Amino acid sequence: MAITGKVWKYGDDVNTDVIFPGRYTYALMSDEEMGTHALEDLDSNFNKNGQPGDIIVAGKNWGCGSSREQAAKCLKARGVGAVVAGSYARIFYRNSINEGLPIITCPSAAKMIQSGENITVDFDKGIITCAAGTIPFKPYPSFVSGIVNNGGLIPYTQRWLTEHGKL
Image 1 (spheres, one colour):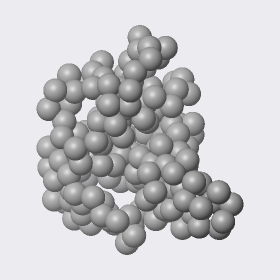
Image 2 (cartoon, rainbow, N blue to C red; image 1 turned 120 degrees about the vertical axis):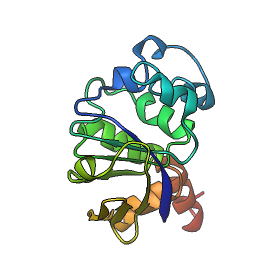
Image 3 (spheres, one colour; image 1 turned 180 degrees about the horizontal axis):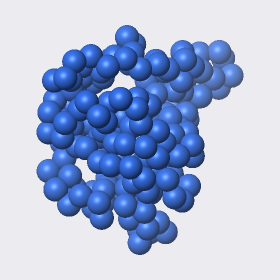
Image 4 (cartoon, helix red, strand yellow; image 1 turned 180 degrees about the vertical axis):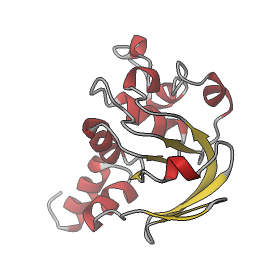
């Protein structure tokens, strides 16, 4: 799987309260409505102008703060093609995989990739292609690829159970 998209670049320590604003945490809303609030407290331009397939590139500790899964869910619902960051808060990383949001750890990417450029993330080959060149990253293990490629942990599990005659 490869994704090509426009880069929205952010720095270090972006927390879940600005990825999905805390004021909406307990509001009942659809995934689509959640997507309309993605990054609205961090970058109103992204919220207004972000397009499906756009790629977020960030520094270290993306998704720190609370463990709310809405932070990953709103990015997926907004159509974010992938998140590439130097490092992640562990719970955000796992929530992203569970939601089927493609997420890559690549510390050198934030240094090499510029906001607004188009990049390609090739998950199978483990490379990011950008204006500055090609950046390698460690590809997912096959079971993680299966989760992401199936749209998240629940669809992956449902498919596996169906294929193995358990449903």
